[in-house]
Length: 178
Image (cartoon, rainbow, N blue to C red; front, side, top):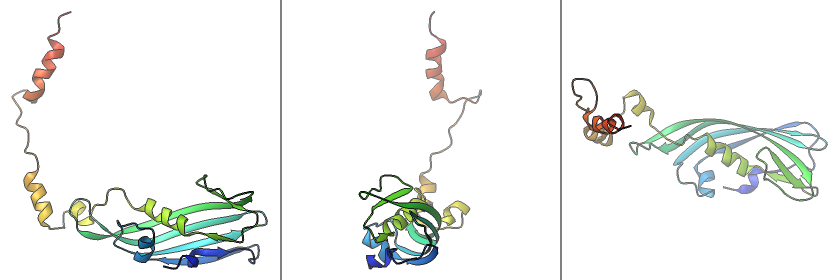
């Protein structure tokens, strides 16, 4: 991946909305050493609104990432849809402490958007990745069969419908002397 393809020189741009597109693939995540994505096909569209004193960036991402299911270790394509808005202003020195505002030095003439694209996509990936076949019951795998086999058995209840293991503990509360 060439990082320079994500660098936008804005000094010569007119005050207007400029549109940029970036195709994100596996190589992009390899550059950031992010191993949770096995493959990717994401289109990121950027509306770059240059104004006299600031720049408004509006990112929209849509596509799929191939990830490993947390339950079965099966590969599957996780749909991705994300949006990020960023305001670029100018000041004495570089500052990206604020999540929504990037401050570039007055002498800056370009902005690198790769980090913002990376973070937007990573945050759009669910923290728990579950194959759609697990959710709807259509996925057949050895791991799912083993999980079903090892699933805890139903607790046998007594006549009152309570769990005998808890009855003794409940007795500690009710048998207290006042």
